[in-house]
Amino acid sequence: MATSLHSTDPRKWILSLITLTCILGASLFIDPPAIGTQILGKLNRVVPDGLTGWSVLTSPNWKIQPLAVNLSSCLPAIGRPGKLVNCCPPRTMLDDPVSDFEFPDPDTTPIRVRRFAHRLDDDYIAKYEKALSIMKSLPHSDPRSFTRQVEIHCQYCTGSFLQQGSNFPVRVHRNWLFFPWHRMFLYFHERILGSLIGDETFALPFWGWDSPDGMTLPELYLNGSFNDHRRDPTHYPPAVVDLNFKKLDPTRSTPEEQIRLNLALMYNHMVSGAKTAELFLGCPYKTGEYEECPGTIERAPHNPLHIWLGSPDIVGREDMGAFYVAARDPIFYAHHSNGDRLWGLWSETHKGFDDPAFLNSYTYFYDETLRLVRIRFSDVMEMDKLRYRYEEVENKWLAARPEPSVSPQLARREIRKREGNIVLDLPSSRFGPTSRVLDSTITIPIDRPREVCYRNRRNGKEREEILVVEGIDVKANDYVKFDVYINVVNSTILSPIYREFVGTFVDIPGGTSSSKKKTTLQLGISEALEDLEADQDRTIWVTLVPRTESCNQVTVDGLKINYTEI
Image (cartoon, rainbow, N blue to C red; front, side, top):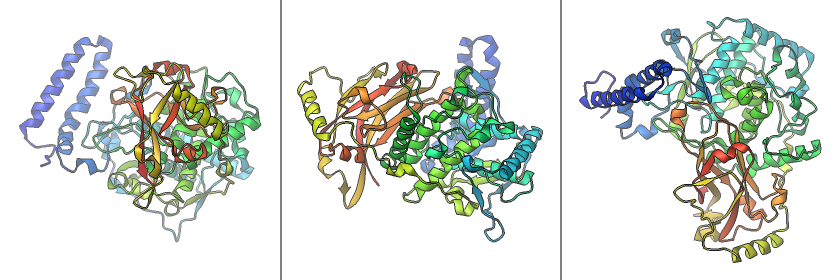
C-alpha cells in the first residue's frame, strides 16, 4: 500500500538514515572544495524525494505510473564532462499557479505554417528578427526571455529535474520522450515569439537538411540576431551538410556524393530501419527507471548535425555540440523543427506508442501569457490540434533505397568461404565477461533463430527482425560514433550508400553521470536482409566500424537478434 510524504512508516525513515550515512561516509573521500556542492545536492535529492519514491517503488502499479517532473527538485547538473552548470528556474516558479493545457480553438485560431528556411522572403526575415530581438532583450526574470528558453532545454537534457516519486532524473534524450518533448518546447517558443510582435500567424522556419535544396546552412542564420560565432566556419555555405558526420574520415566527398550519402542515410532511418515505434521514437522511459536506447532520427541526423555545426575550437564543440547550451544558437530551433516535421511524416504511415505510461506523462512550460502550463504527451500527438503545419517539401529520400555493394550471389560465395574458415577461438556474439573494446573494426557471425524461414509473418502479422547491440558502455568524454554493417565482403567501400549499412550509434556526452547506464542499439534489418538475399540464411556477419577516435574508450557486451510485430 502506497504511503504519503507525511507517513510515519518506520521503513522509510530507516532507509533514509542508511542512505544519509552512506553519503556522509563517502564524503570523507571527496576533495574539500567539492564537498559542499556534492553533499548538499545529494541530501536535497535523496531525503525529500527518497521518501516519496518509496510509495512508487512499492506500489504494484508503479510500472504504469505516468512520468512527471518534480519542479522542486532542480539542482546543478553536468552540462558536459568536467563542467557543472546551474540552469534551474527561479524558485518563485513553485509559487506560480498551474493551468492544464488547452488546445487552441480551431474556429478562431489560424494555422501557423512553418516554412522551408531556404525559401524565406525579406518580410518574414524582418518579422522573425524583430521577435527574436525582443525576446533577447527581456530580463531573466521573464520566463519568455531567450536566456530562460535556453535554460529550459538545459534543464531537461542534463537531468536537472527529478521524476515525481523517484530519484531518477528526467531526461528527454535517448528515449521515447525525445520527439514529443521537443515538439512541446517548439510549440511554446513559437507562440511566445508571435505574441511579442502581435502576430498569431507567426511560425518558426524549418531547416530541411533531408532535402537536397536544404543541405547547406540557411543564409538566414549567418546574419544579425540569428548568427552564432560559436560554430564551425568551414561548414558555412557552400559546404554540404554531412548527416552522418564523423571525425575519422580522411576522404572528402564531392557535393553530389555527399547528397547521395545523405539521402541513403535518410532512407535507412526513415523507412527501412524505422518500421516500429521503438525503432523510430526510442525505447520506453518510465517512472523509476531509465534506459538509453535512442531512435533512428535522434541518433542520426540529429546528433551528427549538432556536432557538425559546433565550433571545433571550443571544448565540447559548443554551442550546438553541447546540449546544455545548444538552444543558444538560433539554428537549434530550425534544426528541431525539421525533426518534428519528419516525426509527423512518419506518423502518417506508422503506429506510435499507445502505452498510458507514455501518453499520460507530463511536464511544464510557460506560455505566451506567462501562465505555467501542465501539458501531457498525449496533447502533442497531432499537429492539427496544435494548429500548425509544415510547408510541403519533396522527400527525395523515399526513392533512395540503397543497393548492395556487390551482387548477392558473389557475396554469398565469399561468406561461405569465410564460414568454412571459422576457427574455434572466433569471438562469439557474446563478447565474454570483459566485453570488447571498439578500438578497431569488429566482424563476427550471429546465428539467427531457427524460425528464420517464417520471419516475415507469425499468426498473420508482419514482423520486423531487429539486430541488437547490447551493453554499449561509453567511457569517453567526447563525441562517439560507430557504424553497423551486415554481410560485408569488401571493407574498402563501407558507406550508407550501400545496402550493407544498417545503422549507426552516435553519442554526445553530457548530463548527470550518476544516471549513466549502458546503452542499447536496436536496428531494423528485415528489408536490408531481403535486398542482400540473406533473409533465409541461418547466420549473418555483423561488422562494427569505429568512426571516432573516442571509440577506443567504448566497450560492447554482445549482439543478438530479436523479432517484434509491426
